[in-house]
Image 1 (spheres, rainbow over the protein chains, first blue to last red):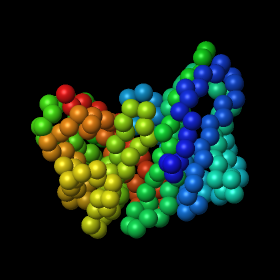
Image 2 (cartoon, rainbow over the protein chains, first blue to last red; image 1 turned 120 degrees about the vertical axis):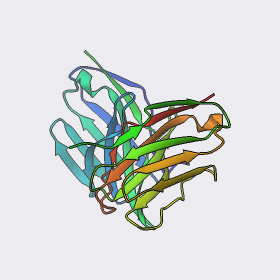
Image 3 (cartoon, chains in turn red, orange; image 1 turned 90 degrees about the horizontal axis):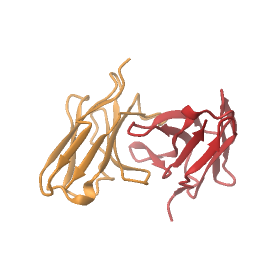
Image 4 (cartoon, chains in turn brown, cyan; image 1 turned 45 degrees about the vertical axis):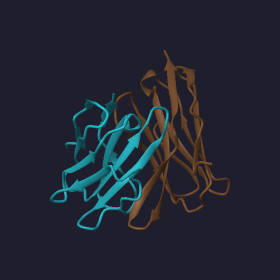
Length: 113
Length: 114
């Protein structure tokens, strides 16, 4: 079983829809939670970053963490065609000398105009 | 400012040949990471450099893989005797320090082994 599970999709929604992307994890040692957006043939781009349970909002994006359920979500309001990308959740823990990231496999999102 | 850069952007090589992939981190970033991303998979950690400390090589899949970082800046990932299963996108990331995990990624090198 992978430490981080993410539904690969693909997910297709109409423009303006609310999008919900989710990851579950099994290791309670994870302390920090991130969402990355990756456009085709580009490197991942950090979108949201949080370390506590609850919600964090940034414009149209809301990151939600529930440590008791080991579940994180990313909500995108008023989705736009430019949001079409693969979304990767990532989590980190202090392991030896490195703040290593463990990634989900990514969810491919298409927002249709 | 300039982000993380990687070269080449694409590399096609024959099975058995050696390849070198280059990463230029963001200026001032002391931590540098290499990841591998295979089709439909998440990012697989390969190796981590932090300042002058010994690198964390725990993610390297075999002894055909090695990496070095010269002068605390540019890094080279070398794959010897490439195999078809090495075909993937190799991503480099850098961060300001090891504290919070905010890593900034380059565009990657797409390696195809024929």
